[in-house]
Image (cartoon, rainbow, N blue to C red; front, side, top):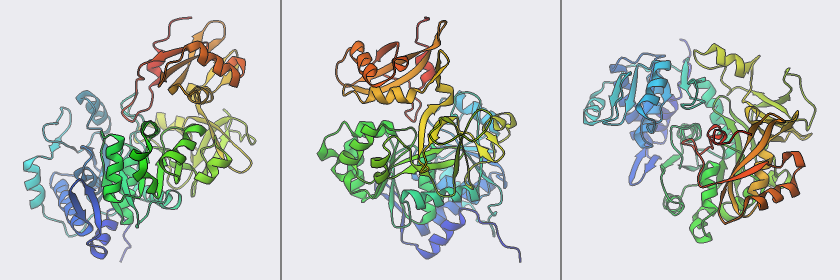
Length: 489
């Protein structure tokens, strides 16, 4: 008798038998225990098979942040399909571009949100009836194939999706448990969109472990999020820096329920040392910073204690991850020298699906190159210096925008900052800074502030005060749009 290669959905079937009354999902007043969840996933997986989904077929999931969305992720896995996440907030043409590239067998959408160019299956009344009537097969497919096409560039540029296997995703789950405190005894509250890597991975990881996932989809006010943490007795929360900065604007009473969290996680972009200090003191002392990528999963974690020792670091490499700093010829650099970050491990994808050209740029000899610049000290702590493509070269000197942004953010009047290169005939590039303010200040005062803290060549030639920044749906600043606003020098 041949041994079965595990499908990640097998674990939910085991939970359904061994912890049937344990609450798996909470959304508002809705609660679903593991026995019920396993049956609901069975019905959805059987219906996908009735729709013609074969093992290895790509299935798009373009649903709102709901229990249905979370169940569909595991249903696609159980049916042997490959999950293609699509943001339901995208415009139809954005969805069409991605589906044209990845050619899904079908796309599961909200009622009334079908789009042309793909076989859309709406979760309407007919869907509910067909799912309820679906017949479970005698055996489900195993997990010896791809599982997830996690888009790494959203809708900007050519769609790129690293293909993750069942086993690679499970290795990422191991890292969540070992490094971030997610586990079977926790209640993870998901307050970010399920389309994005963090919210999706942490929610799937929590179900795999047999814990409870509380869905608190945006939009919400900080007070509403804190109240839901208290109502559901949630213990783990993940937020991107943009959302954490909004919390820092609230009073102590509003944030009080968050202080009881076992773990507060941030990922997506680096925070400043001052912001980390305020998060630990004003929001939650058990604050972890998690450096990760869509393609490679977790890279490093920075604990509360280590934040006190190396306040500018993003931590030490996570479980099973090897990190190196190399030059442009892939030669290993000594400690504290800035170069290209590369890393490898069992959770790292092997390339972009059906895109050998893009794979050649980012994946080499088993290493993944995320496009970030950084350095490592003698103790193995990793320091980010920005994106390689964002690096400014002024008169032949490398300038890292993140350092200037951190300096501006340290000013009490600045709420956000973005630094870009400004094309210059004389120096190749000058430094331009854009800021959002929380109290009035003039640009010259901010320039003087930078001059006190930075070498003269790093001081912005000009600082532009903005009312808002262009952002992705995850809250990251779109620097290309800011650069386009710059006048010619």
